[in-house]
Amino acid sequence: MKLLRVGTAGAERPALLDADGTLRDLSGLVDDIDGTLLADGAALARVRAAAEAGDLPALDPSGLRIGPPVGRIGKVVCIGLNYHDHAREAGAEAPAEPVVFLKAPDTVVGPHDTVLVPRGSVKTDWEVELAIVIGRTARYLDSAEEALAHIAGYAVAHDVSEREYQIERGGTWDKGKNCETFNPLGPWLVTADEVADPQNLPLRLWVNGELRQDGTTAEQIFPVGEVVRYVSHFMTLYPGDVVNTGTPAGVAMGQPEPKPYLRAGDVVELEIEGLGRQRQELKDA
Image 1 (tube, rainbow, N blue to C red):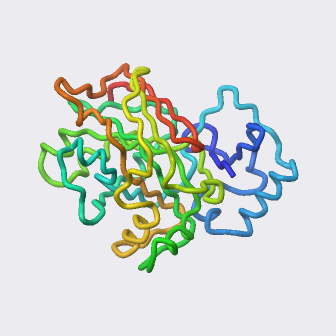
Image 2: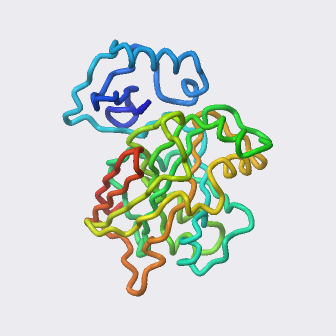
């Protein structure tokens, strides 16, 4: 299923995109697309049955904002330097263990919402990423195979980053990762049963129409299942938590000088095959 949330920010309603591309209203069946729903197999089964029976009312998508596909996110866990080609362009060795950092849930916005360039920023960068959405509580998992069974679905994420804040201003990466609007998510949460192989997903990103990233999750150093297994030994992952799994080569930081960092007025578009497409216009904060 392709689950999503539509409407004004803070007042989104749950919806479903059916096999014919028609937007369907789920608000008569569930309260929201969130951890409570994703952990409830019976509720998900009812949604699936209603969709297959054609019982869900259609929504007019005209002028309807698409919000993040998951509401009430508890935490956003991110994995850095998780693609062989990205590590090479950064001049870094492939890490022996996953590099883990956090983004605040309030960085998450809709897939077509405005991204704000922080005041004083000169190194705002782009990163297309595969996002995992957790469906079952995960703690101290024993294997990657077990971890895959704890995933509710997948989505497109844009891990926007400010490299000066992240790398040159001291402390941890958090300052360059947690600026407002720095995690567009969606358009859909595609349930795990519709993603045959999360290690075979092409990812692409364009800036002002120019292709900048063209990669595949096959290049991940730590595959999806291993990422969830590993993280579960350092923190508990709850239904509705999001895990961004890293970005392929092609970020601005990896380009020759002068590096083409983002500015107000730029347009970023990104997609993952089967998971949908995002578009953001950048403005000054």
